[in-house]
Image (cartoon, rainbow, N blue to C red; front, side, top):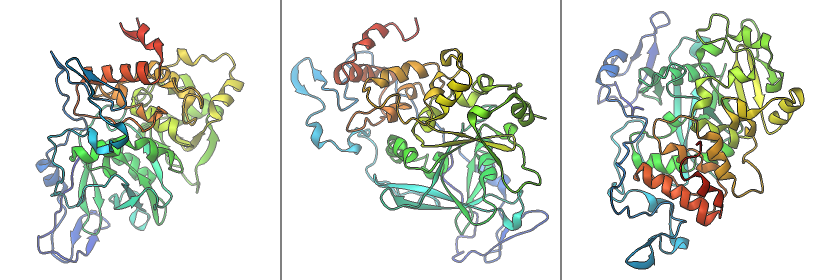
Length: 423
């Protein structure tokens, strides 16, 4: 969203921050600089959450994605993919991208290596003031040497689809400012612990969104990041959550215990349409986004904050819902894929489940049409994993996944979808 802004004097080597309790003005006592958010917002050049989409090829396509498909040219029988045993993750990055990039961001000093990822250490509110600025540390780890962490699942634009970066998240000892969407800011503000730090992976912050190579590498392993997390925190929007009042802790329930009364209580004063049951809950914009599918399927447990309660979702949820409501038809809901939440894959044995998942999620929305494919690759069993490549066209992506299903998975059902999944 935003690569970070440092508002201190250039000579400031040892920042000492103070925050006025009344005005909440942030000032550095070392260099006397003040944080002027309005100036940062005015000078901000937004980084689009989606990369530019190349035009579809009109003639020879020179197909190469995915690398597991043995494409051949008509004038030669040699495979364009070459020896797949020697292919590396970075081989699918567009060739005109710089191999090494010196970041000018005070937040993202170095590009992440393939084995690395960043975690947000979210600080508790200052002096218990829930309206105090949101501050965090951003630390780099490897997958084999990292603390326990949570992931998040939300939509950048929220229910209103407002993806404007306008709210500040302060990072590190200098309180460098990262501008985020209001929905992301609302989520982090809600997630702050009462004391200490909460360790969480947040895509908009953990990934340098202005570095296309880093973004492609990190998106390719989002499945692993979610699988290895303790749980995923699902944020449906500030209209759906309530303060817990005088209670010290949230009420925790299994999702199949969600009732009309609890949903109505959650929405008192809300601008959202009345949500009176699970079916109406799944009609919220959040459940229509393609990326949340793998986030909820691959995580071992999800927690959904509704009102002043927290609802738990895991691999037993679908079974418990079926016991409570045997007549429920998932196909008639707005998000039929949700029946597989917490189950890691569609089935443990079926290698052809990718095609079924495409059918279940085809009506999901994405800003980038290629994400109809890329957004579910983490659910595929193929080894080595297929890596998204944002240098290819929409046509290339769809031909590639068609070829993968037909040639690698040997799933001939894809032939019946030549004129579209829904005819």
